[in-house]
Image (cartoon, rainbow, N blue to C red; front, side, top):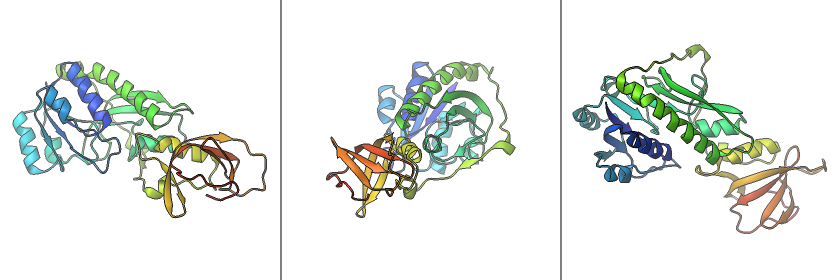
Amino acid sequence: MKIFFTGCVEFSAITLQKVIALKGNVVGVATKSVSKFNADHVNLAPICESNNIPYKYVKDINAPHIVDWITTLEPDIIFVFGWSSLIKKDLLNLPALGVLGFHPTKLPANRGRHPIIWALVLGLTSTATSFFFMDEGADSGEILSQQDIDIDIEDDARTLYNKILDAAALQIENFLPQLADGTFTTTSQLNSKYNTWRKRGRIDGQIDFRMTSMAIYNLVRALTKPYVGAHINCNDEDIKVWKVKIIECKENNLEPGKVLSTNNNQIHVKTNDGAIVLVEHEFVILPKINEYI
């Protein structure tokens, strides 16, 4: 079975290495040398070079000259694991087995953008890893493999990302031989039960201390590394915040955003329903007690 692989993020690198380790016949790779869009961008070229796999840097995977190149490689299946644009009809119809995509939610629920971030921002307690055959919709094709994942309250973007990597690697190990010998089965998505998460913008990452402590905690853990980080707008400057913890505040006559204390570079701030500690942040000069941020 000839596999063409498309991806440009950390997940892509790990899964490509897994496919290679399982002796998958990867005949070509499309990747990006740089990406302004993906905070977790990884250039797959070094992996390709060390394994003698042809590759190209690709801006538009659907461009005619790229489709022509992939056609010459005669893939039986295309893997799209970490690519942020839709695959169009010409490419979808090219390989005999189809185009296999990946989405880290329990499809058909939570299609769309920023699935790891939204799951944490919304305080979900579970998600899933879903491999599916792509169609002309977004995350809407037949499901090949799906694995449930628990989200603990201590999880952040990094630890949840790692859980997803571990689950996906085991799934690939299970379904790769099934794809090769034609013994795989798929499950249709129930379109009446789906929802689609929207694209997030800069304002979605801004901490507002009128939020509850838990809402702030969820926002910060969702956007911490490998992502861009939540931020506070202070004196017209965006200050990144990478880690917080929730604490009690028994005084109910203090306004949200008031700095309660500072200690060892940590900043205690009043929230809507309590207080929160900025544990890891990028304040160069700490705000003073009783200031507002």
